[in-house]
Image: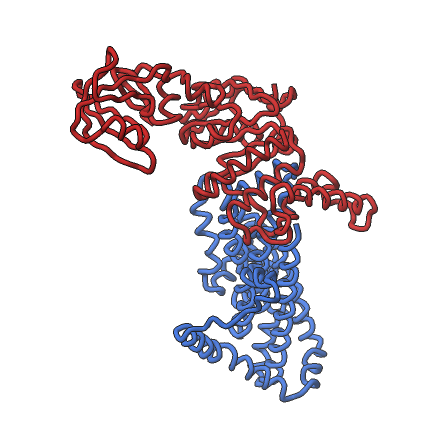
Amino acid sequence: MTSVLTAPAVEPPAASPRGRRRARRSPRSAPRSTLTRGSALGLGIAMVWFSLLVLIPLTAVVATAGEGGWDRYLSVLRNDQTWAAVTLTVGQALLVTALNVVVGTVIAWVLVRDRFWGKAALDVVIDVPFALPTIVAGLVLLSLYGPNSPLGVHWAFTEHAVTLALAFVTLPFVVRTVQPVLEELEVDVEEAAASLGARRGTILRRILLPSLAPAIAAGAALSFARAISEYGSLVLLSGNRPYETEVVSVRVLTFIENGNTASAAALASVMLAIALVVIVALDLVQRRVARRG
Amino acid sequence: MSIEVRGITKRFGDFVALDDFNVLLPSGQLTALLGPSGGGKSTLLRIIAGLDRADAGSVSIEGVDATGLPAQKRDVGFVFQHYAVFKHLTVAKNVAFGLEIRAHGGLRPPWAAQRRADRARIDRRVAELLELVHLSQFADRLPSQLSGGQRQRMALARALAVEPKVLLLDEPFGALDAKVRKELREWLRRLHDEVHVTTVFVTHDQEEALEVADEIVVINDGRVEQIGTPDRLYDEPANDFVMGFLGDVTRVNGQLVRPHDIDISRVPLLAGAVEGTVARLLRVGFEVRATVLTDDGEEVLVQLTRTHARAVGLEEGVTVWLTPVTGAATVPALPSMRSAG
């Protein structure tokens, strides 16, 4: 289930840095097909691959869910326990994404612009949440914030546990999308702004953010998509307590285990819709910021 | 005195970029800082602009001590070699940037009457400036849709927009191809005659400095080698370095002299003429370059026009006599000549 929800979510933001340019093109030079025979073959392979892995399974899920009609959706969402899981998941995912936008950008900034001892090591360590199997990530967090916490922080089985686990697994996204863009930015652009009288804050707002916005939005979209679909790192730490720490992916699993595939599919397609809405919203915000100055 | 630099020292690790550097750059003039790469001229310009901090010394601009001022408050326009355009803003918005910051800092709400008045004033000024740099028809384009020369003109308009006390250009034409560079250079000269803002530009191209500048400061190894008008520097170089950097030099009789300042004849007319044989003749367009091997074993390069060469009857292998023409700039050749141009 996790991968089904993540995969389509990844697609639009990955193309968004280019999308920005496309938005500015005058209507006269509307995109014309540039397909040669070779690239047509490439496109064909891509489409078959994408269809087999993503499009057809997704359609199947939506179709299964749609069999019951709107009533099915309503009855699934009207269930208090499910609704609690949806609000918790979406709320926490938004919170963690907002956190990542700020912290991730700062970390990327430090990694690109500052020189300090251990920088190379930090650069590698950032990817650890990608590398760890998520269940191990849960174990790691449990040892620090669980019942036997050496810090005296007992966050296991509370809402904080969800925040913590999601923040852990989504940390690298914004860092890794912003970093290369920041590396490409020329310092003399900031110097030019400074010599024109712009203060640090103005330079950040009017020069740096518009350039970084597409990358930040792409990272945020990845981070949000990952957060609403997260399962492995959560199950140990959150305890899956209904109404409190149960997230959608756990709820979907429960439905499936009880043989209620239709409800599982309905809930999955609701989450798919939410992911789409958030990603489109992020792209709109990104376009606004990128054009402002 | 417009820009006064006193005792500036700047080190990057062990490398000394500027060493107790002093210079006075006069108001209203177009001054070139000329020297080889790594000689410290760009560092000096950045220190004047406040983009770099000196380790010691002071800078004053129009009589105001600017040593401790940040770049934002120095009232200096800066143009970068690689244009430093704001990629996400249109040409007009790029030029308006400094004006907008000064007008309201972007903090007044869009519906405020004052902001509308500012907007109208800024729009007028931007239109004027784009006219000045011949980019009016490109106002709504993005910088990525401009050529290099156009981008640099836009950067110049952007720097001029805030009416800076001084305009600093760091190798402004360095990234452009030869033809555009030549055009822009002439255009900069005309622009300066129109605007009269104190301008300092850094270049390592002696032709550019000689053609454009009112005054040239030759900088090498973090020190001033010579300051003067282009004519003075060319005709009366203070040392072998300046002589070598400002044009071709060759060596006759222990003297450095310009290859076009050598008189060549097939008969010994003047006393002290050096005898030699023409080893090679090379014709490049209107000029002929002759390499003469003297009896002392020196290899002398002589430049003359094609007509002159024909009149003299130059051919490979003939014996000739060489003398520096009267009034030619000569500098004693040191055993360790630092540069031969």
